Amino acid sequence: MVVTSQYSGHRVTGLYVGADNVRRHFPRHISEIELQLDHLRIECELGPDFWQGQPEIHDPRLCVWLESKQRKEMGWRSPVSLSMIPSGQNSFVLGPSTLNSSSRARRAPQPVASRREAYGPQPVGGAAA
Image (cartoon, rainbow, N blue to C red; front, side, top):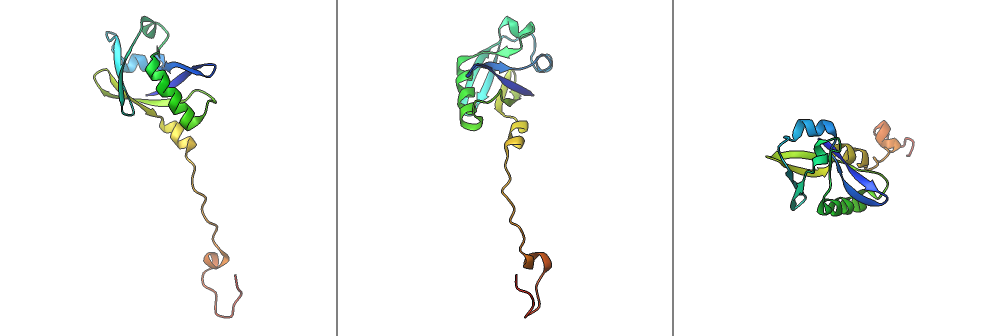
């Protein structure tokens, strides 16, 4: 599922999960989830508002991790889409979204073929490239 970081000014305040994702991926009886953030594993509480129209996760450790990722990889321009992949019971891996990585990926410029490469070998004594 794709989730989005949330901001207030230049500070990350949490992770917006979205109502559709909540209905699909979060059993109503759970009160916390486990998130894998690179090498760090944290448990985040799901407050009552999570189930009542504010599908957001607020945790200070998550915010610090999001800020470090944002600063390092994307700058402070706008909220970042992330992948949140189920990895067990009430457990998810949070990482870069394929939407972000494909839009940010830069291809190395391809060299322009020389005239000789474009037209094949030239006869001896023919036009020089």
